[in-house]
Length: 631
Image (cartoon, rainbow, N blue to C red; front, side, top):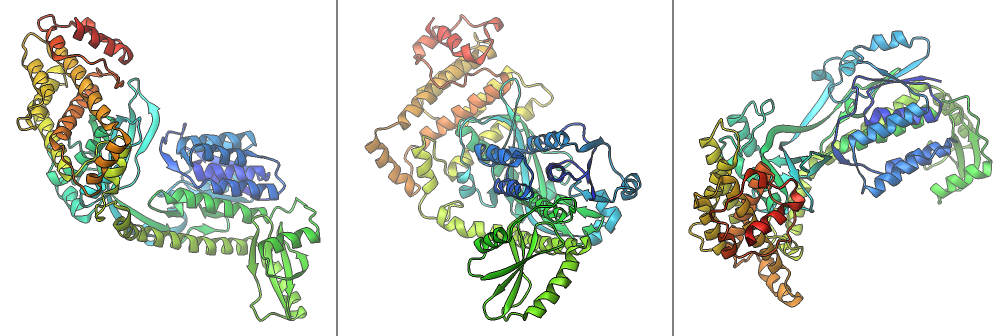
């Protein structure tokens, strides 16, 4: 029995460690990290672990670990943090007796020397930039075939994302970008903010702007909300962040970091030898988060090949049982005889119509492989074929060739699929209204039904205008730490974008800002209180009676709207609320606010608030504001 030596205990390496230990292989795992830190929430094919449970059960393993893991994924809608997966698999492998060594492996020779007496099989699970692969097969320039697929920018920031948000309207109205999904870290800071990443596919034209204006952007990420950038770069970023804010998310604009990368897929042309095999990203890296799923799939297939060489296990399976399993998987075939092979759980099944046919049937994964053509063979020819094939099944080199042939087919199929994704996206957008090509504005209607504000191209133009005004204030105060005075200046600049809007709310807030008897902190408290009342009132208007609401949706279906000034005001109020939330942590998340008139608020004029009046928590902050307003 081979000694399985795994380098790298990421998802693929730790998954392989659990599988091999369940079948009593000696397993040693090398890992250079002291702890797992990748808080990336990915979608995983849970059916793979259901199949893994079936595989180990058919091999006689009495464990339900993968069944429980499958149930866990199902309860999480097939999403899991990479860190959690690594921790679960590593804990299970250690409990089964896997030997873990905290060490960075730098050479193949080092491993072979250490395990020279134990027939080692080294599995390289160290990722896309594997140094072991380069040592074994030469420089990546000659061995790794890479295909650039798509330019992309990654927008990272801190935010509170409580409600489901839809960014389809950004894709519809902003040319040249395609969004994947919002990736949210589960860990939160003391204020409830968490790290968020949004991968955005961009056109070559936009990529050219990045390369020309910010060639060092990967080493020095850009914050366009603070630093001067061209509108061609700032517009899509401000539209995405603005959409989140309108959907009642809170975003710390000062934490935004943008990188531009080239997404590619590729594979190592040479990736295995009889005693060394690359698995996971070290064998093939794919876009669209497919690498992990494919790597796990290939790890399971390699394990099945390894299980065929466990000679110390004898499983008694009846002739009728094998025939029954074969017929269940191949109903049209008339099986007449079954012969065992040199490999565990692999059988030769002979069929007959007029002439004889022969199939290789593996009960471990219930797969069938045809050994004869459709014309059939004589019985003597069948016996000769069985002897020749059985000799191959007893050799690890031959089994590895079959594994690699299947893996080569899978990798090239996935790469072709990656290349087609962009084309498919553009075609389907005509029908499902992603890029605004459909004459029916379906997503606007869906947003209205769910109580969200529909956004159009001119709204995104307005958001850009507001964010540029904010940036101008920060540039004027460059080198000064964010404070209440700067936030009040930003509020002024936001309102200046409304072009003489006549709203009473606007006049009230402008009066607060102009009152020299209030400190900046007091002004901000009164502003936020007024904004909460206004936004709560606007939200109530969306909850119309069914008939009235249905009638109001028809114009949106054709992209029409008659309340642009009101929408602009709400956008500005939302931006102000977020600005104060991000900078001073003042406002409450609650939208239930006691209505207070401007006369009541005016009664506070001259009284002011002291620093000691700042609420100790967001939960009781509105109570403080209500007291202020009613005094």
